[in-house]
Image (cartoon, rainbow, N blue to C red; front, side, top):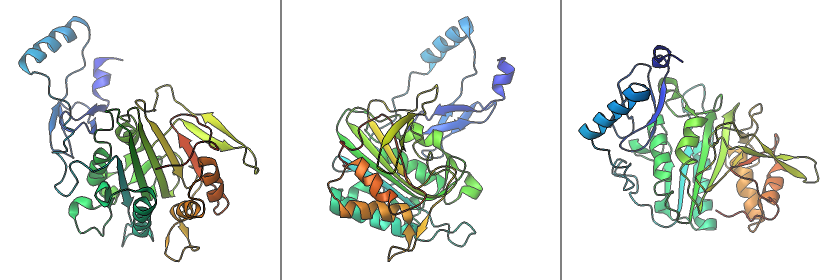
Length: 331
Protein backbone atom coordinates (compact mmCIF):
# COMPACT_ATOMS: atom_id res chain seq x y z
CA UNK A 1 0.00 0.00 0.00
CA UNK A 2 1.34 3.44 -0.91
CA UNK A 3 1.92 6.09 1.71
CA UNK A 4 -0.71 8.27 0.00
CA UNK A 5 -3.34 5.54 0.31
CA UNK A 6 -2.47 4.84 3.93
CA UNK A 7 -2.92 8.54 4.75
CA UNK A 8 -6.58 8.21 3.72
CA UNK A 9 -7.29 5.49 6.25
CA UNK A 10 -8.27 6.03 9.91
CA UNK A 11 -5.66 4.84 12.40
CA UNK A 12 -6.25 2.94 15.64
CA UNK A 13 -4.03 4.02 18.52
CA UNK A 14 -3.89 4.36 22.30
CA UNK A 15 -4.07 7.60 24.29
CA UNK A 16 -0.63 8.52 25.65
CA UNK A 17 -2.15 9.62 28.98
CA UNK A 18 -4.94 7.20 29.99
CA UNK A 19 -4.42 4.40 27.43
CA UNK A 20 -7.94 4.66 25.96
CA UNK A 21 -8.64 3.18 22.52
CA UNK A 22 -8.71 5.98 19.93
CA UNK A 23 -9.36 6.25 16.21
CA UNK A 24 -7.51 9.07 14.45
CA UNK A 25 -9.14 10.63 11.35
CA UNK A 26 -7.29 10.19 8.05
CA UNK A 27 -4.45 12.67 7.68
CA UNK A 28 -4.65 13.93 11.28
CA UNK A 29 -1.39 14.94 12.97
CA UNK A 30 -2.79 14.59 16.49
CA UNK A 31 -5.90 13.31 18.25
CA UNK A 32 -7.52 14.52 21.48
CA UNK A 33 -8.75 11.86 23.91
CA UNK A 34 -12.45 12.38 24.77
CA UNK A 35 -11.84 10.85 28.20
CA UNK A 36 -8.81 12.61 29.69
CA UNK A 37 -8.51 15.46 27.12
CA UNK A 38 -4.85 14.59 26.42
CA UNK A 39 -3.52 15.28 22.92
CA UNK A 40 -1.46 12.45 21.40
CA UNK A 41 0.73 13.17 18.39
CA UNK A 42 0.53 10.96 15.31
CA UNK A 43 3.73 10.21 13.46
CA UNK A 44 3.67 9.93 9.69
CA UNK A 45 4.06 6.36 8.50
CA UNK A 46 7.55 5.84 7.10
CA UNK A 47 9.89 2.92 6.55
CA UNK A 48 13.51 1.93 6.43
CA UNK A 49 16.34 4.35 7.20
CA UNK A 50 14.03 7.38 7.25
CA UNK A 51 11.89 5.75 9.92
CA UNK A 52 14.95 4.86 12.02
CA UNK A 53 16.49 8.35 11.87
CA UNK A 54 13.26 10.17 12.60
CA UNK A 55 12.52 7.81 15.47
CA UNK A 56 15.97 8.43 16.93
CA UNK A 57 15.63 12.22 16.68
CA UNK A 58 12.13 12.11 18.14
CA UNK A 59 13.25 10.00 21.12
CA UNK A 60 16.07 12.46 21.89
CA UNK A 61 13.83 15.51 21.67
CA UNK A 62 10.83 14.00 23.46
CA UNK A 63 11.64 11.40 26.15
CA UNK A 64 9.17 8.49 26.36
CA UNK A 65 6.04 9.24 28.34
CA UNK A 66 5.21 7.25 31.44
CA UNK A 67 2.66 4.47 30.91
CA UNK A 68 -0.99 5.31 31.57
CA UNK A 69 -1.50 6.10 35.25
CA UNK A 70 -3.09 3.34 37.33
CA UNK A 71 -3.99 5.82 40.06
CA UNK A 72 -7.09 6.95 38.21
CA UNK A 73 -6.15 10.66 38.26
CA UNK A 74 -7.89 11.09 34.92
CA UNK A 75 -11.24 9.77 36.25
CA UNK A 76 -14.14 11.94 37.52
CA UNK A 77 -14.03 12.70 41.24
CA UNK A 78 -17.16 10.61 41.82
CA UNK A 79 -15.43 7.42 40.58
CA UNK A 80 -13.53 5.43 43.23
CA UNK A 81 -9.79 5.98 42.72
CA UNK A 82 -8.77 2.63 44.14
CA UNK A 83 -11.82 0.38 44.30
CA UNK A 84 -11.63 -1.64 47.54
CA UNK A 85 -11.25 -5.42 47.52
CA UNK A 86 -10.47 -7.69 44.63
CA UNK A 87 -13.97 -7.52 43.15
CA UNK A 88 -15.24 -4.79 40.88
CA UNK A 89 -18.36 -4.31 38.73
CA UNK A 90 -19.57 -1.91 36.03
CA UNK A 91 -23.37 -1.88 35.63
CA UNK A 92 -24.85 0.05 32.70
CA UNK A 93 -28.59 0.57 32.27
CA UNK A 94 -29.84 2.73 29.41
CA UNK A 95 -33.55 3.55 29.07
CA UNK A 96 -33.39 6.03 26.13
CA UNK A 97 -36.38 7.79 27.74
CA UNK A 98 -38.63 9.96 25.55
CA UNK A 99 -37.18 8.54 22.33
CA UNK A 100 -38.43 5.92 19.88
CA UNK A 101 -35.72 3.60 21.23
CA UNK A 102 -37.02 3.65 24.82
CA UNK A 103 -36.46 0.49 26.87
CA UNK A 104 -38.48 -0.41 29.95
CA UNK A 105 -36.73 -1.76 33.02
CA UNK A 106 -33.06 -1.06 32.26
CA UNK A 107 -32.55 0.76 35.56
CA UNK A 108 -34.38 -2.06 37.36
CA UNK A 109 -31.86 -4.47 35.82
CA UNK A 110 -29.00 -2.46 37.30
CA UNK A 111 -30.72 -2.38 40.70
CA UNK A 112 -31.29 -6.14 40.81
CA UNK A 113 -27.78 -6.94 39.57
CA UNK A 114 -26.26 -4.63 42.18
CA UNK A 115 -28.25 -6.37 44.91
CA UNK A 116 -27.22 -9.82 43.66
CA UNK A 117 -23.52 -8.92 43.56
CA UNK A 118 -23.58 -7.46 47.08
CA UNK A 119 -25.74 -10.04 48.82
CA UNK A 120 -24.78 -13.24 46.98
CA UNK A 121 -21.19 -12.68 45.89
CA UNK A 122 -19.76 -10.25 48.44
CA UNK A 123 -19.14 -7.20 46.23
CA UNK A 124 -18.75 -3.98 48.22
CA UNK A 125 -20.98 -1.03 47.33
CA UNK A 126 -17.90 1.12 46.67
CA UNK A 127 -16.67 -1.47 44.17
CA UNK A 128 -19.76 -1.16 41.97
CA UNK A 129 -19.95 1.65 39.41
CA UNK A 130 -23.50 2.29 38.18
CA UNK A 131 -24.14 4.22 34.96
CA UNK A 132 -27.83 5.13 34.64
CA UNK A 133 -29.84 8.31 34.09
CA UNK A 134 -31.08 8.11 37.69
CA UNK A 135 -27.74 8.36 39.53
CA UNK A 136 -27.97 12.14 39.96
CA UNK A 137 -24.41 12.63 38.70
CA UNK A 138 -23.62 13.83 35.14
CA UNK A 139 -20.46 11.69 35.21
CA UNK A 140 -22.64 8.61 35.75
CA UNK A 141 -24.99 9.19 32.81
CA UNK A 142 -24.56 6.26 30.37
CA UNK A 143 -23.13 8.40 27.57
CA UNK A 144 -20.38 7.26 25.23
CA UNK A 145 -17.76 9.23 27.17
CA UNK A 146 -18.83 7.85 30.55
CA UNK A 147 -19.14 4.25 29.36
CA UNK A 148 -15.59 4.47 28.00
CA UNK A 149 -14.45 5.93 31.31
CA UNK A 150 -16.30 3.19 33.18
CA UNK A 151 -14.60 0.47 31.19
CA UNK A 152 -11.19 1.98 31.92
CA UNK A 153 -12.13 2.20 35.62
CA UNK A 154 -13.16 -1.47 35.60
CA UNK A 155 -9.81 -2.80 34.40
CA UNK A 156 -7.48 -0.58 36.44
CA UNK A 157 -4.56 -2.70 37.65
CA UNK A 158 -5.90 -5.90 36.11
CA UNK A 159 -2.53 -6.72 34.49
CA UNK A 160 -0.60 -7.03 37.76
CA UNK A 161 -1.14 -10.79 38.15
CA UNK A 162 -3.25 -10.44 41.31
CA UNK A 163 -6.46 -12.48 41.62
CA UNK A 164 -9.40 -10.26 40.65
CA UNK A 165 -13.05 -10.79 39.75
CA UNK A 166 -14.57 -8.25 37.37
CA UNK A 167 -18.18 -8.01 36.20
CA UNK A 168 -19.73 -5.91 33.46
CA UNK A 169 -23.48 -5.82 32.88
CA UNK A 170 -25.13 -4.07 29.94
CA UNK A 171 -28.88 -3.50 29.82
CA UNK A 172 -29.21 -1.44 26.67
CA UNK A 173 -29.58 -1.51 22.91
CA UNK A 174 -27.12 -3.00 20.47
CA UNK A 175 -26.75 -2.65 16.74
CA UNK A 176 -24.44 -4.28 14.20
CA UNK A 177 -21.97 -5.68 16.80
CA UNK A 178 -21.87 -2.42 18.71
CA UNK A 179 -23.30 -1.00 21.93
CA UNK A 180 -25.58 2.04 21.72
CA UNK A 181 -24.83 4.57 24.49
CA UNK A 182 -27.48 7.04 25.61
CA UNK A 183 -26.22 9.66 23.14
CA UNK A 184 -25.53 7.29 20.24
CA UNK A 185 -27.55 9.37 17.75
CA UNK A 186 -25.06 12.23 18.25
CA UNK A 187 -21.86 10.44 19.36
CA UNK A 188 -22.17 7.11 17.54
CA UNK A 189 -21.90 3.55 18.84
CA UNK A 190 -19.14 1.69 20.68
CA UNK A 191 -17.94 -1.22 18.46
CA UNK A 192 -17.14 -4.62 19.90
CA UNK A 193 -13.52 -4.29 18.73
CA UNK A 194 -13.06 -1.27 20.99
CA UNK A 195 -14.75 -2.97 23.94
CA UNK A 196 -12.59 -6.05 23.48
CA UNK A 197 -9.45 -3.92 23.29
CA UNK A 198 -10.43 -2.04 26.46
CA UNK A 199 -11.70 -4.71 28.87
CA UNK A 200 -10.53 -8.07 27.48
CA UNK A 201 -7.01 -7.65 26.13
CA UNK A 202 -5.55 -6.17 29.38
CA UNK A 203 -6.70 -9.08 31.60
CA UNK A 204 -3.60 -10.60 33.20
CA UNK A 205 -3.13 -14.00 34.89
CA UNK A 206 -5.48 -14.54 37.80
CA UNK A 207 -8.04 -12.01 36.54
CA UNK A 208 -11.54 -13.23 35.65
CA UNK A 209 -14.10 -11.10 33.82
CA UNK A 210 -17.79 -11.96 33.45
CA UNK A 211 -20.11 -10.04 31.11
CA UNK A 212 -23.89 -10.30 31.26
CA UNK A 213 -25.38 -8.84 28.09
CA UNK A 214 -29.10 -8.04 28.10
CA UNK A 215 -29.66 -5.99 24.97
CA UNK A 216 -32.41 -5.24 22.50
CA UNK A 217 -31.06 -5.36 18.97
CA UNK A 218 -29.49 -7.68 16.46
CA UNK A 219 -26.06 -8.37 17.94
CA UNK A 220 -26.36 -9.52 21.56
CA UNK A 221 -24.22 -12.60 21.03
CA UNK A 222 -20.99 -10.90 20.01
CA UNK A 223 -21.42 -7.37 21.34
CA UNK A 224 -19.31 -6.36 24.36
CA UNK A 225 -16.48 -8.93 24.56
CA UNK A 226 -16.22 -10.40 21.03
CA UNK A 227 -14.74 -13.62 22.44
CA UNK A 228 -13.38 -16.40 20.21
CA UNK A 229 -15.03 -19.54 21.67
CA UNK A 230 -18.76 -20.18 21.51
CA UNK A 231 -20.43 -23.00 23.46
CA UNK A 232 -22.97 -24.64 21.17
CA UNK A 233 -25.68 -26.98 22.43
CA UNK A 234 -25.90 -30.18 20.39
CA UNK A 235 -29.04 -31.71 21.93
CA UNK A 236 -31.85 -31.06 24.39
CA UNK A 237 -30.21 -33.47 26.82
CA UNK A 238 -27.46 -30.95 27.49
CA UNK A 239 -24.65 -32.11 25.20
CA UNK A 240 -22.37 -29.25 24.22
CA UNK A 241 -19.38 -28.44 22.08
CA UNK A 242 -17.01 -25.48 21.90
CA UNK A 243 -16.68 -23.83 18.51
CA UNK A 244 -13.54 -21.86 17.72
CA UNK A 245 -14.44 -18.56 16.07
CA UNK A 246 -11.00 -17.10 16.64
CA UNK A 247 -10.02 -14.67 13.87
CA UNK A 248 -6.54 -14.48 12.41
CA UNK A 249 -5.77 -11.73 14.92
CA UNK A 250 -6.33 -13.06 18.43
CA UNK A 251 -8.97 -11.32 20.52
CA UNK A 252 -8.16 -13.16 23.71
CA UNK A 253 -6.74 -11.94 27.01
CA UNK A 254 -3.24 -11.35 28.36
CA UNK A 255 -3.43 -14.51 30.47
CA UNK A 256 -6.76 -13.94 32.24
CA UNK A 257 -10.21 -15.45 31.62
CA UNK A 258 -13.18 -13.68 30.03
CA UNK A 259 -16.69 -15.18 29.86
CA UNK A 260 -19.90 -13.68 28.48
CA UNK A 261 -23.53 -14.75 28.82
CA UNK A 262 -25.83 -12.99 26.39
CA UNK A 263 -29.53 -12.95 25.74
CA UNK A 264 -29.65 -14.08 22.15
CA UNK A 265 -27.72 -14.62 18.95
CA UNK A 266 -26.91 -11.83 16.52
CA UNK A 267 -29.85 -12.80 14.31
CA UNK A 268 -32.27 -13.00 17.24
CA UNK A 269 -33.72 -10.59 19.74
CA UNK A 270 -35.08 -10.83 23.27
CA UNK A 271 -35.50 -8.12 25.78
CA UNK A 272 -38.41 -7.72 28.19
CA UNK A 273 -40.18 -10.22 30.41
CA UNK A 274 -43.59 -10.17 32.04
CA UNK A 275 -42.73 -13.06 34.37
CA UNK A 276 -40.98 -10.76 36.82
CA UNK A 277 -43.04 -8.60 39.20
CA UNK A 278 -40.73 -5.75 38.17
CA UNK A 279 -40.31 -4.86 34.49
CA UNK A 280 -36.83 -5.67 33.21
CA UNK A 281 -34.76 -7.61 30.72
CA UNK A 282 -35.50 -11.31 30.22
CA UNK A 283 -31.81 -12.20 30.34
CA UNK A 284 -31.18 -10.41 33.63
CA UNK A 285 -34.31 -11.76 35.29
CA UNK A 286 -33.74 -15.40 34.32
CA UNK A 287 -30.02 -15.21 35.14
CA UNK A 288 -30.77 -14.04 38.69
CA UNK A 289 -33.64 -16.50 39.06
CA UNK A 290 -31.40 -19.42 38.04
CA UNK A 291 -28.74 -18.41 40.58
CA UNK A 292 -31.30 -18.01 43.35
CA UNK A 293 -32.74 -21.47 42.71
CA UNK A 294 -29.31 -23.15 42.66
CA UNK A 295 -26.60 -21.00 44.33
CA UNK A 296 -23.77 -23.55 44.01
CA UNK A 297 -24.11 -24.23 40.32
CA UNK A 298 -21.85 -24.82 37.33
CA UNK A 299 -21.80 -22.92 34.06
CA UNK A 300 -23.54 -25.83 32.33
CA UNK A 301 -26.40 -26.07 34.82
CA UNK A 302 -26.76 -22.28 34.88
CA UNK A 303 -27.09 -21.99 31.10
CA UNK A 304 -29.53 -24.92 30.97
CA UNK A 305 -31.67 -23.31 33.69
CA UNK A 306 -31.80 -20.03 31.76
CA UNK A 307 -32.54 -21.86 28.51
CA UNK A 308 -35.53 -23.57 30.10
CA UNK A 309 -37.15 -20.21 30.84
CA UNK A 310 -36.55 -18.09 27.74
CA UNK A 311 -36.50 -18.21 23.97
CA UNK A 312 -34.36 -17.64 21.99
CA UNK A 313 -31.80 -19.40 24.08
CA UNK A 314 -28.89 -17.61 25.81
CA UNK A 315 -25.36 -17.82 24.48
CA UNK A 316 -22.14 -18.66 26.33
CA UNK A 317 -18.80 -17.43 25.01
CA UNK A 318 -15.31 -17.47 26.51
CA UNK A 319 -11.69 -16.60 25.84
CA UNK A 320 -10.75 -20.26 26.33
CA UNK A 321 -12.43 -23.68 26.45
CA UNK A 322 -13.41 -25.37 29.72
CA UNK A 323 -15.72 -28.14 30.99
CA UNK A 324 -18.98 -26.29 31.62
CA UNK A 325 -20.39 -29.06 33.87
CA UNK A 326 -17.31 -29.24 36.09
CA UNK A 327 -16.36 -25.58 36.39
CA UNK A 328 -18.26 -23.87 39.26
CA UNK A 329 -19.89 -20.56 38.49
CA UNK A 330 -18.26 -17.97 40.75
CA UNK A 331 -18.11 -14.18 40.59
